[in-house]
Every structure is written in structure tokens, then in C-alpha cells.
Length: 415
Image 1 (tube, rainbow, N blue to C red):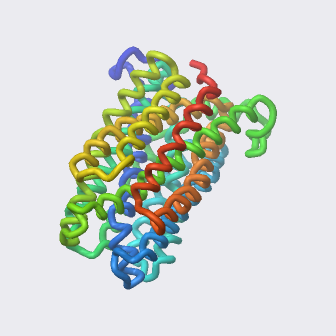
Image 2 (cartoon, rainbow, N blue to C red):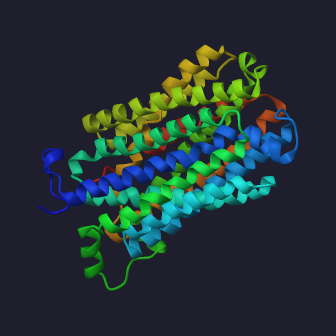
């Protein structure tokens, strides 16, 4: 049985398929862990580095700049490691991405200035962005194509579980200095030795390399038939990720600023932020499989359009007016359900590009969209100077409407 054969059940999967699946899943889980460690401690850690009260506006401004640098690094890492994945192979590139994000997440703990933290977050994001592209292409080329929606849901759930792990460690570290939680991010490096030994390069990648004298370059994404797909996917990712990451970054500050939370002790505020993120991730895990079911029923294009529209509506209703802490948690659960749309991108985007442009194309489009999202995080943060975080989140929700409109032109991947 070849690595891309259409298995009828889990027991009929080949050893390579199972190992590739586990490697990608673990990589994505630790992605989620290292990705969201910062959002849990952004306000207290940045305030500590600036030697300012947590409520000072500079804390929010510098925190937003650090997150913007993270998103820029994520974008560049997707393009850089995506290219490495096409040239060197998926397995080798996967190892490099994990070492990158694990090492620099751990180094964040030694930051003594806010810009130190910004540099380390930027460098760790290079690996996180690259891991998305490489892991998605690895499974796209090894697992049965008809399983794609469920594979996407399972991979995205790995990220959610990683975030829940971050919440767990946030709870354990709630009475310690914020910097120490970054040391947890080093642990993913331990799986690299197993990946290098157990996960071979895919047959499809070897075949494409053997039949091509010169691998296509990044500029080939904007030539011929690939150009239209590239521009459409770039636009969808840029707009939707701006709205999504504005929410994901500022929601922690919003929770801490709620009347029922802001007068609590530091540990109490941390606990409230962790609980909110756990509720969000619980909804997101269910949303991944709900999105997969919709994609199986009506196709990827209609599923992406539908989930973008619902995401915008739910987010808009949640932040339309000031609400109680309990009401916000309910809203967070339903927002999490809508986040299943990003799980669809996992298996939807790589097959839209030729094999030797697969990780380059998917990584470039999905992650360059984060460059726009980085600017959006800072831009919407400006509203906190004249209003409150709720207004910024409300306005960001509107972006899901044009994202849904753009998704109407999204090509369906060929099975």
C-alpha cells in the first residue's frame, strides 16, 4: 500500500501514514502551546519589563507591538520554511521549525527589556509559521484525500489542546513571575530526534523532485494558473486573520478589564484570563469538527463562506454592548465554534498548489496574511486610547463580511 493510498479505516493506514500524522499532530500541539503562552502573560510581563502599572497605556501599546512582531515573524516563517520544505523535504523542515520555535520561546524568559521579548517572539514565530505549512503539506501528501476535512479538524484540535496546555501551565505558574512560563516552551524540541528517525520524506515529494530539473521558485506563485489562486487566498487570509488575531490578542485584556475581574488580585485576574481562554478552546475544538462536517456536506468554499459570516455575527453580538462576565464567557464559547473555519484552511489550501510549490504556496498565502493581521492588531489597539477594547473587537468583527465575500471565489481542492 502506498503512502497516499485510500485507507478504509485507521487500522488499514500504513506505518508511514501513522507516523506522519503523529509528527504533524505533535508539532501543531506544541505550536499552540508556544503560540499562546505570551497572550496569557502579556499584560503582567510587559508591565514588569516597563516598570509600569498594568493599567498604563504604554503596556497595551508595547504589548500590541510585540504581538505584531510575532505575527510578522509567523508570516515570514511560513514563506521561509515553506520554501525549505519544498527544497529539502517535509520531515527535515518540520524538525527545523520545531527547534526554532522551542528554542526562542524558552529564551523569552531571559528578557530584561520589552524589545528583548519582541525579538524573541519574532524569532519563535518564524518556526511556528513554518510548522503550519510543512505539517499541512506532510499530511496532505500522505493521508487519504477523502479524509481531508477530518484531518484538518484533528490537526486544528491539536493547536487547541496546545493552548489548553498553555492554560494549564498558566494556572500552575499564576503565583510566580510571568517570565518562567516561557521555559515550558522548550519541551517540544525533545520530539525532533524521533521525527528525524521515524518520519521519512513523502513519496509524492520524492517523485516530484525526481521529475523536475529545477524546483519552481516563489515568483512562480504569481505566474500562470497559480497566480489567480495565490491572490484570492492571500486576500481571504489577510482579511480574516486580521479580525481573528485582533480578537485573540485583545480578548485577554478585555477579560482583565471587566468590572467583575479588574479589582481581583493578580492571581485572580490570571485565573479569569485562563478560564476565558479554556472556554474559547472548548468551543474551538467542537467547531473544528463542525466545520469538517459542513465541508464534507457542501464543499470547502461554502463552508468557509458560512463560517466567516457566522464568526462575524457572533463576535459582533458579543461585543455590541457591555455585558457581564458570564455572558462574555458564553460569547467566547460560540466564537470558538466559529474558529473551526481556520481548520478548513489546513487541508483546503495545500492541494490548490503544485507539489513543489505546495508548502511554499500554502505557507506564503496563509502566513503572509498575518502581515496584514499584524498591522490590524496595532491599528485596532489604537481604539483603546479613545474608547475601550470592546469597541476595537466590535469593529474587527466587521472584517469577516468581506472575508466571506472573497471566499466565494475560493477554488475547490481536487480530490
